[in-house]
Length: 552
Image 1 (cartoon, rainbow, N blue to C red):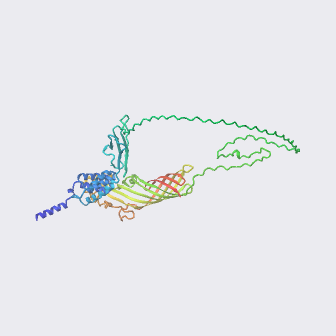
Image 2 (cartoon, one colour):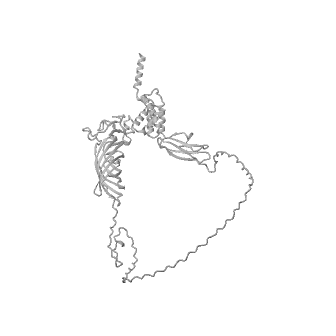
């Protein structure tokens, strides 16, 4: 019976062995995998690299490759994926290792399609060609080589008798790029051998002309002389008979006609100087004309209407707009309520409908979206001890409905630019997301040594894992105060769902929204289109917006 009893004690010793007897690198691997799952790859990469250097496990290698992908190091990640995908189940591998091998095959194929490649093709054969990329000689430049996207690559090429050339390029994901390499020959260098030219066969000498026998020419035939043609004598026309001219008929004398008074010549008119269209005086052509002859009557003066000045741009009463609207919450605002906090940027956008009131005022109705995302931030209320520090996180998302009154002040006659001043109010509703609060302790403390848990830099505090966890943190991680249950997984209730008699319930559900003042500048390059730039102060931080409006 001694052997079975000894075997039983050995089995219990293995099953109940404390973590201190775990394999090398398991502690770093577990910490790195937890950090990778939370999205903290900067913290996870050194832990997982240390674990892999001590002992390789697929379950820790794949999360390491996942973090490399997020950091943009695709080549490192691809190498790990392919290495894990080629493995087979080995003794000591658990279910997580087997699942990691299966997922690595799929991830390797997906990642290979994203890695860009580069091919350097010489335009002609160069003697002694050497191509370097980032200082590394490429043996076969015409073959595709893989590089990380976004990395600046320096390509240097040299060959005998040619000048060295270099260029910088940056590849994008999935890009397949080819570069045609052309090198300039050095001045005075040897020219490349010319291609042999096929010689033409020698030309045959021209043949001598054969002398032709003279041909006897026939004497020209003599034609008889042409007979002269007798000219007919010119016919003499009989002389024309003289025609007797009739004496001029005498008309009876008419009664003496009245002499017609000749009009005196007009005096040279003076040139009329042209006046600008807005001149108040009438032109010379508009003055009444004076009769210059006995039969001419003066014409009445014609008054021309004065040219009207161009009217200003047509007023548009209804506008539909959209654009970016965000808030900036400075750390100073956290200091009004307590200690800690950080600068927070709240991005979002809005859709607006504005109508004109009178000549210069706009009434603007808007619906906006805001994302109140905040990373882990230490915070404690004012006047509370250092042991009340908590790590606060937020992924709240809100919709805001509001109305603003804006006064437009044109800066030019055509109302191309306008200065805008106004104020607004409304209400917000956090329709999605939560607020998380977790007790925290000094990150420099040594677990198990209560004396090392002393106040320090709150931005180095870490979350408590439970009451007095780690050991010695009972002053920071406890169940004595209002935050007794603020441990990982705790979600802050809203103002309307907080427990009775407890101060919890800081998550806003509905909150007021106020902007005062709001100033901005409007640009209206076209009649129906305008651009708006605005800034202001609100209860949720400093407001900034950039949008576009279309007239309806």
